[in-house]
Image (cartoon, rainbow, N blue to C red; front, side, top):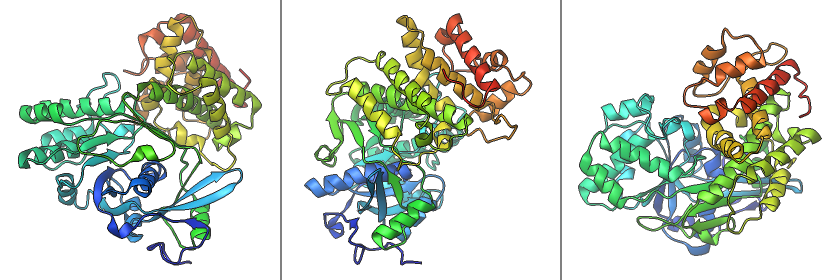
Length: 485
């Protein structure tokens, strides 16, 4: 076994190294949730900004749950490898912007100390949609979410992301320290606005003065992030070792494409992200965000559900099926018809680019991974645009296919009777709804349409569209070979 990646000295010449002096970095960002997407997206963009313009924008990371990634980064002095894969081969970039890693459950006081340090001017996060503690039905605070319940009961010893943000800001206000900028990078529509609403609803229940101070002084910029990032595998670690000459247990892999659109509203400065290819600082991110959610994420979900129930392990394999690839392309154009013009973007070109990215043979993005957390993802990716399409006289057929595919996936059983885990925060509700229901399209769709807070009445009361979902679900239940649509 090769030596562990712990220093930039002596690495293989095939590895691209940071072009700035790490020893001069100081912490300016605290990032919550150092998962694969953060390592494939946020940290490389910050590396590029440090190379282009310097600054005190080193990153500290903190895991609010499992310690594995933070421990691996700590063991490697924050260094890790990003593998960029396409059909021409794989390149390796060693990222140096991470200075320290924390594990919140081990030392919550230590994390709170970092949140109140004036050197930390941005607190960014990639904690997944379900960690925010919001109610999809209202868009507001979910008062039944375990973290929200715990943090409202004991605000000074938080365990969830909203609780930590609020307590950190409260300590700064109490000590007269300028606020940090909370920066959500999760795939939530209007993620900054959602985060602001949750923080303000939380503070309205515990401290009216803090509530007013945050509302007046703390910006919550929204972002749109895009880079396909599969889960790391043994092949990831093997290629990282081959290309760097070191063992790297924090290595990740991703595609060449990367895009980050950021609302330029910050309380106390930011890195020069605009100097990095793929980053765009804007006044309002909503048009770009809607484009990505509906065209990319919606098609991705469609392919994931159809692909997984059809026996395809990876999205690239699904794209080898000409009919499914054509369906994805058709759905992208249906989604494009629900969009207003997006500055600087040709939507036809964007759709073609997405098809090429999905078909990238070097990216092994599992259908099962994309299919998880469907109840969190469906509203913004598929259900909202379906409502708009129907309102404009469109049949919304590809949306019916996608919803039928999710319902077939939600049954939790392959055609041969083999069960699989339904990885969704509402899995227990789904299973209870369909436990005693006949395995038919009409029965399953009728049951799942009643899942509280998920399907708008615009869809469930549209008889033709609901019938289309039922009919397509029946086809999928009867034929696991994925009949052509």
